[in-house]
Image (cartoon, rainbow, N blue to C red; front, side):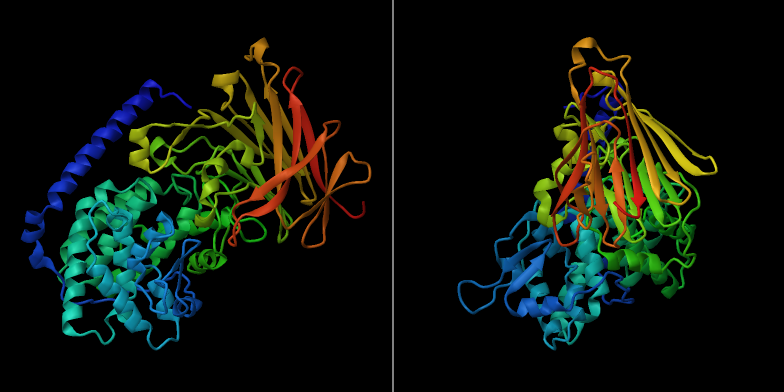
Length: 572
């Protein structure tokens, strides 16, 4: 468990005080008196129905007809031991993730995409059941990000939930819109840093543009949205959390919002188009040859249609030629081979709750076939892996003494403010990239093991111009390591994508990797013993998959200086 330094204690004190201030403001703004004073601002019409760019699943309605309500990798059963259906809001939730998605109403788009003539009636039935529910303010239904998602879902699916509705149901919905807009304005300060906070501001601007009598929100929240863009989006379009998956959600939210401004004859936030373009460029930068995102710092199962939709709205269709990024990832691309490497320190404390201990880890693909990967962050159905997936051992890099290069900070105040334990270290990461004509290489170091073991990890990766050979060099600088620590073990992990067939070569001193494309690559490591061990690939959209990892193990009593290669071969 990591200890906090003086500056970090100061940051912790600031976050705690800021939470108290935000909670006090929220308490006043959501009080009955305040709500009564602002009741006159309830809307009486939906002026714009924004487009929902997220992909719909028409089979959702079919499953629903069988009493199955599937969300977040879990299924809620709507039968009460009989043939009668219960509302999803009246059953015991399978887990909190399922319940969170239920109250966010994103599933309305699936009903809207179905050909079921009763879809609108069913949506209105469930909506009415929610509005009649007695949800306390401590319930998941009233978490800031859930309220924000619900507002946006109701707006994008307002045609579905208002089709044929009588005046009483219409008025009830408008009153609920007004109440939730006021409530979100009160509690958006309590949203977790990062995407949840951004989502709240985006929902407020959506409501101000799309609902009548809510225009007073637009100017103030547009300004706050611009400020949040400046805070969270880096110069190259990367996100401050270093989680590239967040960019997909931002793009799918911001693209329709931009068109809402035009529909109301208003000017979108200055620089919004530029930021959207930069985010798209960064997503392209972080893609491997198979089109998937590199699994770094919280990137998990990314639906290909979501990524494709986000990138479809980028007219440039360009990938940056730079080998490095402001988000501190390195990309080496030669012919059909792509390598991505994490060469960054941890994000700022308040944005590190989803960050992983994968410094100097890399992913490698050849054409459309991934070869070396990180295990990735698990989807909602595999949440049990979430804590372990953040460890160094689940990344393709060097691990020392069975410990991670980054350390979790277990602190009640921080976890309450951030939603999960943040991490600290490495404090110093250095790297450079050089093209020497026949090949391109990157050299990087990190000090994540310096404070506990006095060791600094050095890694060099060199890709030849044909993209057929990757040479690696891992080394530990142990000059500051005490003699009593020299018996600790190191392990260099290379997690292999589950689509690759892995087998020992005939000489037993190398490993053959047969890709889905039919190409064969050979892994060698000089005299270092090569171990084949079990692994798990968590970033598959269908769930966790068994995989294999190549592991080079040794003892630190001797010099740790290991060279290895991945090379494409014609015949074994």
